[in-house]
Length: 296
Image 1: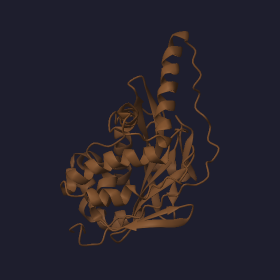
Image 2: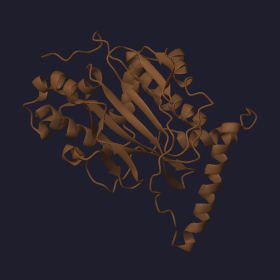
Image 3: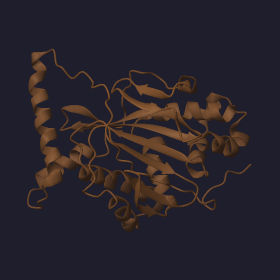
Image 4: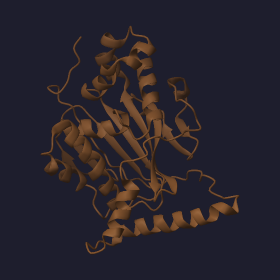
C-alpha cells in the first residue's frame, strides 16, 4: 500500500497551550565541590544576561544579541538520560516521568495519541555548562499509525525497521496525527528567546526542505510568539499535526492564529525526529515504540 503524502492534506495544529506551571520536583543543583563555584557563578551571570535580552534590544550592542544567539543556537543535540528507553509497556499508567528533571507526561493525549518518546532540549551557556531548556514528549495517533503504516512495515523486524530510512520519512509525511508536547524547565526563558530559537532552527529546516524563499512563512510562524505570552517553568506548548494543512496556535485555550503549510509541518517535526534531532535518544525511542505499534 502506498503511503498517503502531500495530496492528502496534512494538518499541523500547534496549540501553544501556555498553561499554569505545575509543581514538578526540582532537580538537585547543590554543589559539593568548591572548585565548581566559579563555574556556577559564571553560568548564573551568563544566563541572567541572556534573559535580560528579552527587555533589551539595541542594535548598537551586538554582544547582547550574540549572547542570545549563542545560548539558543542549534548545537549540542545529544542529551543523556538516566531513565533509559521508554517502551509502550511503561505507558500503562496515566503519566510517564522524565526522572532527570521531574517532568511528567501523560501516556495518552486525547483518546488515542500514544507517547512514543521523551527527550530534553539542552543548550550550552558560553561553553561552561548545559542547561535544560524544556522536556518534550512525542505522540502519534495509534489508529493512524496502524492504518497507514502497518501494511507496509508490519511484517518487518525491529532491526529491519531501524535500517529502513523510509520508515521515519513515512511517519512525518503520511497523514498521521501527531503531537510534540513541550514543557518548559528553564525558569528564565522568555518568549522572545523562544521566538529567536525557532527562527534559527525552523528557518534552517524550511530552507532544507523548501529552498531559500520561505522567509514570509517563517515570519508568519514566529510572529505568533507574542511578547505578552509568559512562559514560566511548567508552561506547556503543544505542537500538533492534525488532518488538513493548517496550523492552529492556541494559548490558554484561545486560538491566536493559524497557518496553512505542509512544509512548516515537516520542518517542525524534523527538529525532534528528523536526521539531526535535538535529542537522538528520544528519536531512537520513538522509532522503537512506533515499530511496536505497527507490528501489533
